[in-house]
Image (tube, rainbow, N blue to C red):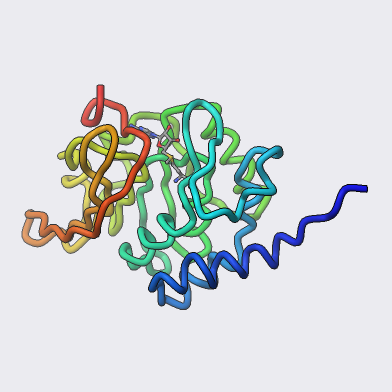
Length: 215
Ligand code: SAM
């Protein structure tokens, strides 16, 4: 007989051993990770690995990021309730769910329609109501700009100018920038139209493809 997986226990262990122990402290971020069922965001045959300390394939050559990477990006982003957030790279929708759980008003763009539709369905089933847009996120989404926070979950060759323009004054952008194989996690804060950058270590993301990304 097949043994039932205790996802809640796996989720608690993930938060303790992969996230808290590596320095993530924001209580709201930790409680969002404790609440969201990551197993719903991975393909059925990979649910058993949903809480492993690594990214996982979600189809179409794309991945759901490693839990710790989602956590460090969220902690650096400092999202607050009611804030208007633009996410580029919906993927599975897991990062979108974390932002929704933190009370943000989320607009999320995904270039692969099948992934966008799947994420939309998963998020709806869990009661979250982000706006999911199919398109090229490298040019942002001017219709709802400016954004207090922009989170890019794919690796860019440089920070797209359109995204800088669509950031609110004092807005933040979190984005991995580098070559196709490795990137550095950057937090940019807009001040008087310029971006002040902080560097937060190496990472590896799938490429951000589009007009202001990789061709
Ligand atoms: N945040 C996602 C999650 O929690 O599952 C992981 C995202 S995955 C690492 C990166 C995603 O960015 C992929 O789904 C990919 O199709 C998408 N992507 C790449 N370039 C894009 C672009 N220009 N606009 C929108 N999405 C893009």
